[in-house]
Length: 173
Ligand SMILES: CC(C)(COP(=O)(O)OP(=O)(O)OC[C@H]1O[C@@H](n2cnc3c(N)ncnc32)[C@H](O)[C@@H]1OP(=O)(O)O)[C@@H](O)C(=O)NCCC(=O)NCCS
Image (cartoon, rainbow, N blue to C red):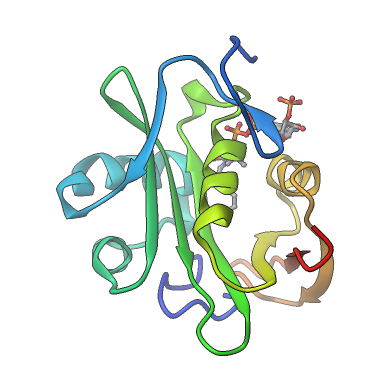
């Protein structure tokens, strides 16, 4: 299971506009998610994270937590991606808690676009996230978007897998 959404303790491109570190597909919209999106978000959790999916209460919490950032990616009226983030409070470090894209819609820039849009809404110089060490697609996406290795958390996930903390320092940008 991934860590609970809040607080976060470290826990083919078809034209379109350039967004941050990638290109987005035509017809993609990224807008705030809410509790009204609960059903498709629960489905997305299952198809994206399997046994690591957040349970119902955690998903609801992520969708209503005051101050939290939750963005949905929609294509043709279908919710195909979601990003959850927590803005920095006092330490200047904002956290990306989760990004998931429907398997049918991957490799079209949606994950990168969600990440980039989250970053644009997050305060502080540093954005940090934790990713499974055995998740090369996500690690690659984060690297392409400017994240670098920060630390390794042994036995971080329920199955004993390590977590990699990655961060993007925006001071020099
Ligand atoms: C990780 C994830 C969000 C990426 O979403 P996406 O929409 O496919 O990402 P993008 O299309 O923006 O990919 C950006 C870059 O990341 C890398 N990448 C993404 N998926 C990859 C894969 N399966 N294999 C290799 N590289 C990959 C590529 O460099 C890609 O650029 P390219 O397509 O031009 O080569 C998606 O695979 C997913 O939802 N995975 C399951 C949930 C998860 O692991 N979330 C992250 C941890 S919270």
